[in-house]
Image (cartoon, rainbow, N blue to C red; front, side):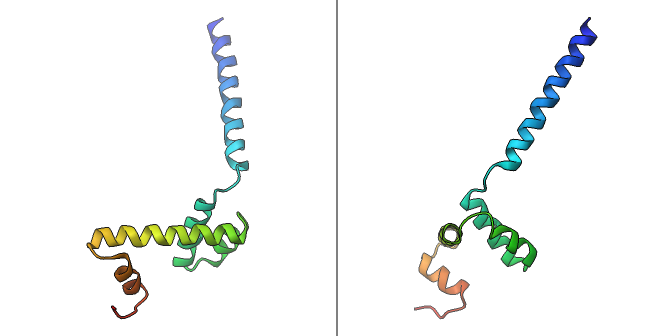
Length: 98
């Protein structure tokens, strides 16, 4: 009897895990996920991945996400280097200090 209960419980658990995987795969991409994937694909020069990611969200949303990522990255580097965000941004772009 307990073997039968375990088998039924196992089947129920397998079905729940399968539904969970399906929901995750069908979940729409968040603009910040898209921005992170896009920027990392650009840094790795992975055109196939860039093309895939650009379809996740609208171009406007992707631009906003990339801008937000850039701001956060510059702020984090500025704190790490104990410098102003302006100085760090100019340094990253190879511009002379002002």
